[in-house]
Image (cartoon, rainbow over all chains, first blue to last red; front, top):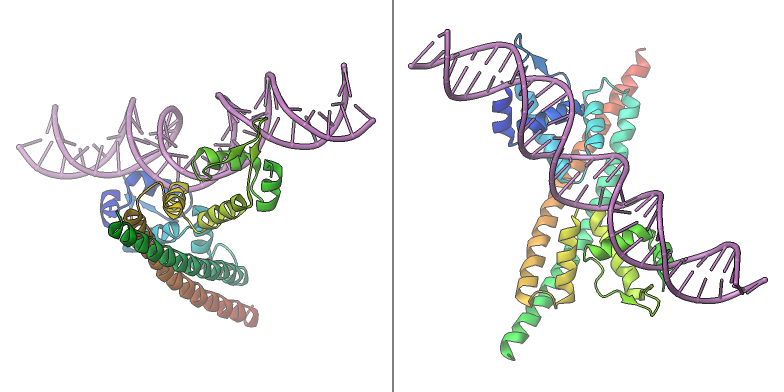
Length: 123
Length: 123
DNA sequence: CTAAAGGGTAGAGTATGCTCTAGGGTCAAT
DNA sequence: ATTGACCCTAGAGCATACTCTACCCTTTAG
């Protein structure tokens, strides 16, 4: 597929797709005779994965490293396994902190709701 | 306390502390007669909270809005409660996605470890 | 053949979040 | 009174991650 279709299927602009390619996030993008990019269906998944990891707070550089390790050919398997373990630890720590934040937000939400109710009763 | 102490107690540089103040993240910073900033102990907590939320992926603007609502005087209580509910939903969604990512990383880690073992056996 | 639609590159511009520098005032100790 | 350790502001500079523009080539429909 051409870039317009990938853009439409992923919701990521062609500018950003080309930027991602330059940044090494989309490896092996084929070119047709006319120099147009030719994406496979796997590219759709890869872009969506990049986006998901990005919104979760990963830097593009980290995402690139993880995707490279998943492809299992840019770095060796043991190194890749270590990277996965390291990232998983980070993710788990982040989950734990986010849980605390969620609890805090819930507590403050209730407090503010109570305050709002009090304000309505005694205006 | 002066800015050097806040810097030392939070690990956040004076440049960044002044930047945060300008961005509205540290409201009501007192000044001494000589125009030096004079922070209270509460400022330490506030800065640490800003940092925590930031590393969890919140934008400074969002953090400012949440902290403002917690102070309960810049926006009204009902609006504040809605903001907390909204942010909590976002946080919970992010937790769910991160859990999936954690599982994926664990799976890939095992796969790579298996590959590494296979490589060692058949060199 | 030509115009419109789509593709390409290079590079400028923008937003965010720092980080640092220049230039200058304050204060405590000598 | 001067030195050294602080503090101040304004603004430049930088990294990341886009976002957009200029300018040119290719393909397809009329």
